[in-house]
Length: 216
Image 1 (cartoon, one colour):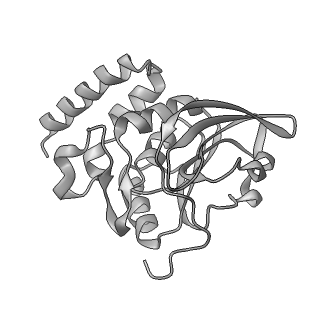
Image 2: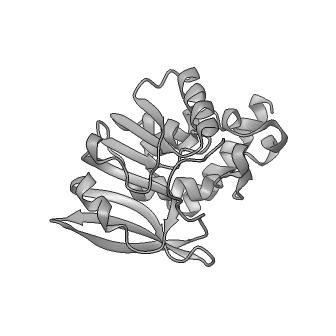
C-alpha cells in the first residue's frame, strides 16, 4: 500500500464522513494522523479505508472506518479525558483516542491482539495509551472513574454495572441487543446514578465474552 493510496483512501472517507455529519476537527485530524494501513493485515490493505469490516488476527475483524468514526464522534472525547476501550482489536481506535484524550486504557481478551496492538501504538510513540490483556466484561473499576467508555462488542442488556465506572456526565458507547440479530448502538450518559439512553444506530457486533482467550 503506497502513501498515495493511503491519501486517496482518507480523502474518500472524508467525503463520506461529511455526508454522515462527522465534522469534528480534532477527530478528523486524529484519523488523518493515524496510518490505517499499519493496522490492517497485508492481504487486506486495499480494503483498509472501506466501509466493510476487515479480518485481522485471532479470527476477529476491524470495523469499517465509517462506523468507527461514527462511534468515536458520538463518544465526543475531549482533551485531557480518561477513556476506557473494551475490545482493542488492531489498536487503531485506541491510537486515534490517544491523539485526543489524556489517557486511554484499552482492554483485549486475546493476548496476541493485545501484544500486536501495543507494538503498533509504541511505534507511533503514543505514550498515553496502554493496552491490557484483560477481561472487559466488567470493565476495570480499580482504574476508574473514566470520562468515556467505548465497547466494540454487544451486551444482551443495558450494561448498568458500568455506571459506577464513569465520572458525572460521562458517556459510554455500547451495542445492546441479542447476539444473533442487529443491536441498537446506544449513547449512554451518566446522570446521577443511572444512564440516560439515546439510540444512535443499528450494528451487528460480536457479543461480549467472559474471561480471557485460553490459547491465543
